[in-house]
Length: 262
Image (cartoon, rainbow, N blue to C red; front, side):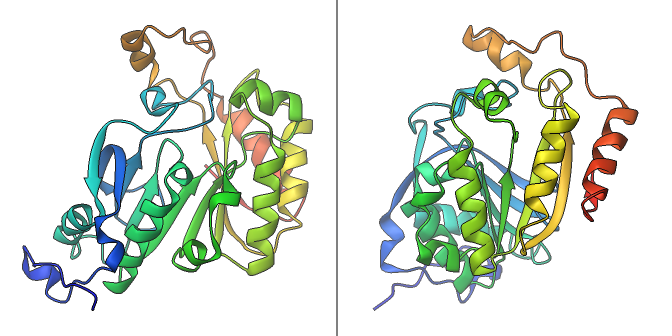
């Protein structure tokens, strides 16, 4: 039998989870009223662990192997359900770090969320897309897929890894018709070459499952974390992109019949 969760508020009267409720995960942090990681108001669960080393990462303390606070699916789902009335027009987003470093935890969380009528979103670089089982994807309503660069040299410089796994994952998602939002961080002097943006736009135009494209202007909100960790911040002198730069990036996407938002 599938055990019922003991409800801790009126919002979870029918809450149930699967036998994998005892699955544990390493979390980095939680945002209970997120507005930028998927549609509507969302409970955003940031997991610990990431194989990438993005130069502009705002959670450098989540890089490397999963570590930090260990939680169970059951306890975490109980906390999500406290906010069910607030996120009823939004849902649950699992981000990171890279959530696909903990695919079983993600799958169990999404299974519990879906049983309670909660929309599910996975925020991923796609680098570990091969770890996303068909079952996990079936439980995922939306994927926020970060394509950080098109040029392989720029991608490697930006992230420390290779772009091909992300592109394979994007094609897989297109083949199964899984709803995707594409996200691209515009970094002056790093990812803003027009040929680089055009490569992404051309590739995205071949996909049949993209519901939204977001150009995310580079910012340095996480710079203080590098100072606290004693890690050099290589983009300390990099400015935020100008409105003209952002508009030009949108124009390049438009050349391929795509509407990009910022």
